[in-house]
Image 1 (spheres, rainbow, N blue to C red):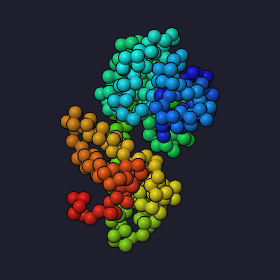
Image 2: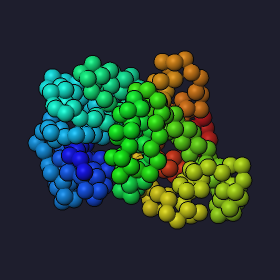
Image 3: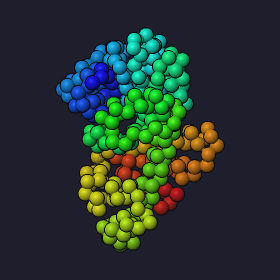
Image 4: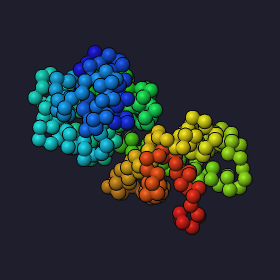
Length: 304
């Protein structure tokens, strides 16, 4: 079993760290939130007073942070994690599980490499349910050597672990996946809303589309219209799940990447615009499938 430093013990990081504890690892964790630290200690973890303290003496250092600026701050600033890890012997393996922009992921990985450290960008898919159940999907960018070393640890937090290629490609996979998901969820929501307007029973539409060419995860497992999927967030007043505000963040990351690479993504751009309106309407803390409820409250002319 390993000694692991875990920084970021929020809605995703907390249950991920808890699964490492269940697997028998010694985990020292840090989060800016006292409540998150207390929950981590209650799960059997050791709370640290800072990110650097959490990482001290660790064989593996994991971060799960909100955005690129937080990742750059924790890993790169004076006295940050890369500097601390470079001074350690033996040198720890570095893993960032945050969902951030590709450029930030590659900047941090390049800085780590210059310090003689192996670093992986390993964003996840599966939401808070997958984090708690240990069934996340990890999309992992970095060297094959680092991936092989990290895989046993990641396997204790997830079910599917895929090596995507060089540094930054894990983030690329995540933002492409979530752009597709945002577009698909919007389409499913529109289809069920139109069915309501036309007097077609939701369950009947689901029975047809779940076995026909419109089939998708957003429909079969996560239907945004309440009723057909009893365990979906739509059946629980859109409790997340995966918050709409986080989906907006990820789709905006996809659009920044599309702009940087000159890639035409008109549906991705439209999904980003719609999710911005969902968040502006005060639904950001609800599951991203709440776009169905938001659309139902609009007129055709108001959405455009």
